[in-house]
Length: 169
View 1: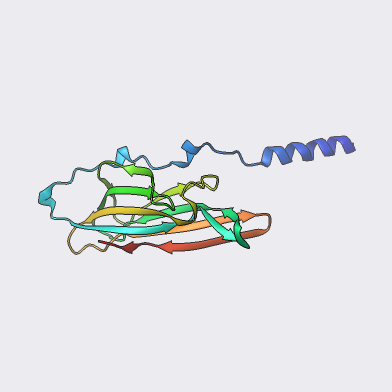
View 2 (view 1 turned 90 degrees about the vertical axis):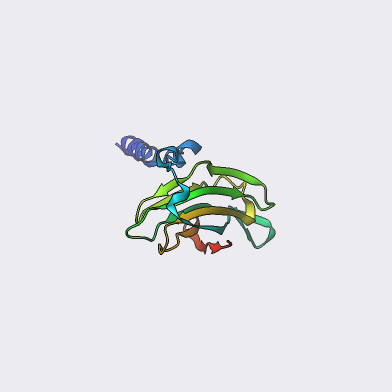
C-alpha cells in the first residue's frame, strides 16, 4: 500500500510540473495580421519613446547577477481612435540592435494592450537593455503608454519592478 501511495505522489508531482515552452511559443503577437496602411493624408502626429528594460540585475556585488523576465506593455489609451506603431526595436546594454519587431506599420485598436515577453533565460539585453518605439496617433488622441514589468521568482522569494517610457521625440 505504501508503494502505491509513493508512486501516486511521484506521478502527480511529475504531472503537475510546468512544461518548458519553446522560444517561439512566447511570441504571441501576430504582427503581420496587424499591418496597417498609413497615408500621408491621414495627418497623424508622430512620436518616439524610449523604454529601459532589464534582462539582468546585480545582487550583492557586480559579480553576482539575476536574470529577469520582462513584459513590455504597449497600451492604446484612446477610447475612440486606433494608434499605429511604425517601428519597435530592442537594443542591448551596449547599444547593439537585438531585434526589430516590426518592419511595417501596425495598429492597436482603442483601449487595446499588446505585450512583448522577454523570457528569463534570454539575458542578451543585459542590465541596460532598451526599446525604442516609433508611433503615430490622430490629432487630439492621447499618447500611447509603454511600460516594462520585470519579474523573477525563486523558491519563496520574488522580485518585480516597473519602468515607464519617456518620450524622446
